[in-house]
Length: 178
Image (cartoon, rainbow, N blue to C red; front, side, top):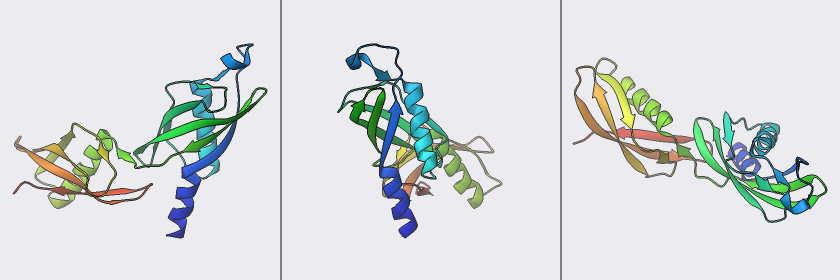
């Protein structure tokens, strides 16, 4: 849809200008601290009406053209790798391009909640809990195994399979063993 295409293009490439902390005197030693990078990425995503619930940038962005950093963005209970690349440095300002190419990843906690939701709707009296060891790439056709426990303590493995995937939404089905 046009709305999704618009959101995808807003999320895919953003130009952001950051102020570099002036803790270091030499231009080559200046960096955008991870916390500052996280805040600026959050501000820019919010300005584009994309509201992340968390952003983690494990390393600083060097204040030099071509420097790169990767951040993990969580939005809509999905995770994305966001790639930051410095495009220019002027004094204490660093301009950079932010790209979030996808696919989204369903973290294990979200995956367990989705499996729980599907199975509870199918049989609210029998199903108790789900445990998934691995996150699931939000790519149509991808799948992973989760262990489910019924109220009587019996366990079984089920397959969580992605049935639809866009940059901002991933739907899945839960397949029972035959």
